[in-house]
Amino acid sequence: MKYLIYTIIFLAVAFIGISIRSINLDNLMEGDSGNAMIVIAASLCVIVLMAILLVSRTISKKHD
Image (cartoon, rainbow, N blue to C red; front, side):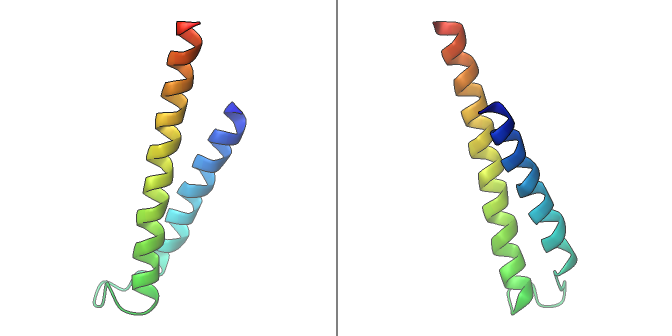
């Protein structure tokens, strides 16, 4: 499970990297730039959720 979480985090970082390349700074919320901003926000949420899952699993293992 731990490796799956790290793989998901790596894929989220990869999506952020790909999306940054398609951002047009003149029109941030139009066309492909808008889609890229949504993907970046979603990927950041995934990273935060996976970090919370890792911490909660660590706490759970220490508690038992």
